[in-house]
Image (cartoon, rainbow, N blue to C red; front, top):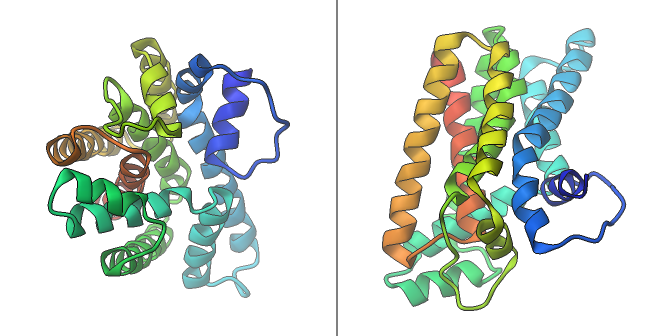
Length: 246
């Protein structure tokens, strides 16, 4: 239960009571990341049902915007921040020390601003197309896949920074059985979408996770919390795109 509470506290704004946790609970909490994603997806789907009932006041364009706004609010924009720092660091830094220094800097650079604009606009456009095509269940499952991708990325990884941050605690305490349970959660949710679509979702997710892992390892010899957040955003973007074209 402590691990479940920790997962929701870390990934959402859900006002759960504080619990006393140990380092092992951080890795265990990642078992529930896809479940947190399903909860987020359920919130988005509920908003869709409301908007559908009041279509006169909520055209599809507005609904797509509100769905992404709700997701951002529920997650505190945590992964968007990681995506922004990831772009600034990996595009603006030439060596390991410079990349890590930029990532740690709270200020947003030009790569972060431009990247966030295109990411958010793209996701809104994809959600609009998904709603227009009647593939609404994609809205329910894409947060699940993106949260599972974070678990996959962290499996067997390490934080390259000498100072131990929050991401280090998650990565170091994650074990293979935790990943297996998270995968069972994620695969179970795929019953809501066509079988072939779910296969493509996971193939592309694994591809991008492996690609980011290789890039991050080559550049900074590991992964950081910002790399994990960026992976979640990239997988969300990719899954929504696939939801449009499949």
